[in-house]
Image (cartoon, rainbow, N blue to C red; front, side, top):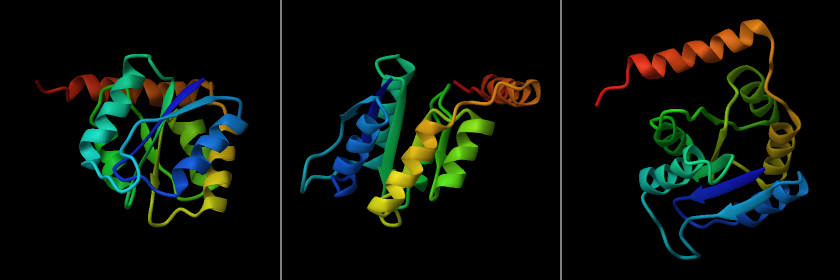
Amino acid sequence: MKVIVSSDEYCSLIPGILQEIEKAGHAGHYAGPGPGEEQDWPDVTARAVKRVIAKEFDEAVVLCWTGTGAALAANKVRGIRAALCNDAETARGARIWNHANVLALSIRKTSDPMVREILSAWYGTPFSEDDWNLKQIDHIRSLEAQFDIP
């Protein structure tokens, strides 16, 4: 799997995230500002998740100061199911029940040990394929179509 990582500011979490992605057997690519630089979180997040939709990447990890803005921006793109995860159990649930394809993280609140736990849960948890769960994902897709306003 190919994973794109973006952030509105380069931070110390980036190398660890890329390392954990590779440890999980995937290829990680950082697409964001370099050290000392900043970009607007809606822009950098949108660029990353659009590359997921374009199938250049399979998934994304997006960051901003709280993680909320990155999650909001990502979820504006049809086909993206971004989950803001502050712990491993939330990451596990986002994969099982929500089939999340984008992980949003807070630069401020996420420590290096927590990144390792979250990414281990994220990549170690497959999407649920039970009938009830698949019905929920279909419902999300129909909501996307219903509220798709030009």
